[in-house]
Each structure stands twice: as structure tokens, then as C-alpha cells.
Amino acid sequence: MATIYYPSCKYTAFSPAGSARISEIVRERYGFTVAGCCREGHFALTADDTAVTVCNTCAAICAEDSPAKGRSIWEVLDEDDTFPLPDLHGAKMALQDCWRAYDRRGVQQAVRSLLQKMQVSIVELPENRQHTRYCGTTLYAPLHKANGEYAPDRFIKRAPGLFVPHSKEQQEALMREHCRLIPVEPVVCYCVPCTQGIQIGGKKGIHLMDLILGLEG
Image (cartoon, rainbow, N blue to C red; front, side, top):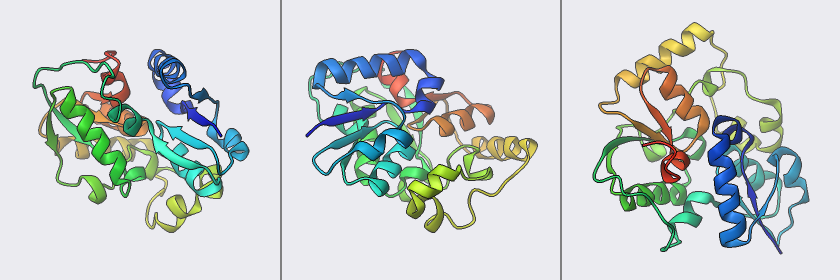
């Protein structure tokens, strides 16, 4: 029986300092085993294991292609009443929900709870929670082959009309149009492609983990 944390290849590339810090925290504070890439590592999971993920794609792969139980890092941190969160003194921030987690109510609630504990004044978007159809530019590009193989329910069966190739110029225009409808910034995201899409669209996108760790403010 083991609890295994998948640090996400995307988040590690996006925020090397943030990824290294949260990996150190879960190892030292919770005794988790820190793994590598979920696409390779999830095959070793057993029904007695728990996979903890920061990435919504990793979560889908572990859920659909392994017998392990799954939790998000947001739920782990939210349940830790003594975790040292920064005080952001009522700062107003928009929250961007991710399509890859549109039905993961526990994740959505934990994200909001953490922001509230940090004294963030959350600005909800009209298409939030289960209504979101946003994941940066990735839904306007071909589906990664392995994602479709390991998590076909999430990325094929429940993705009609998505992962349709668009040109870079079209993708950028779609991101700008999306950001035009967001009334405030910064925009907090719990997904790397979401964060990058917000940045492409011209607004300040912040990954929630970086916000928690004080790497953005």
C-alpha cells in the first residue's frame, strides 16, 4: 500500500521551482512517494495504492487505466488544517475551471476552499464548474495519442467536437476572445494549458500551485 504523487510533466516544465517544492512537501510532510511520468508509471499501481495528482490528465489516466484510488493534491492540501497558506488580503481574482475536471466536484470545491482560506475574493465565470468548456488551446489541437488510449472515456467518448485542429492564429484569436469576457485579472487556473491559454489571450494567468507556494502574487 502506497500513496504516490505524480508531479506532472507539464507542471514541472511550466514551474520547475513550484514542482520541486510541492514534491518536497508531499514527501516530507505526508510521506508520499514521488513518481515520474504518469503515462509510464501508472502501470505499476495496484488496488491498494492511492494516486495523488496535480494534473487533470494524470488524474484521468490513473482513474481509467489503473485500479488505484485517486485524489487531487488540492484535496490533500485543503484537508490539512495546518498547511501554511499565504494571506492575500482580499485580492480579487477570477477562477478558471478546467474542462478536464468539469465533473470532478471534489476538485472544484477544494480549489475554491483553498482560495477562500488564502483570503482571495473569487470572481466566478459564467461557464464554471460543470459548464466549462475551456482548457487553453489544447481542445483546438489534435488529441495526444496516449491520452486517448489510456483515458478514452474522458478524451474520446466525452469529448465530442473537441480536439479539432486549428491554426496557431486561430488558437490565439480564440484565447483573446475568451479572455475578453473575463472581467478581472489575475486569473487563477489549476491546469497548465488553462494557465498558458489565459496568458496567450492577454491576461495574467496564475497556476494555483504557484499561488499557494508564494511564487506568484
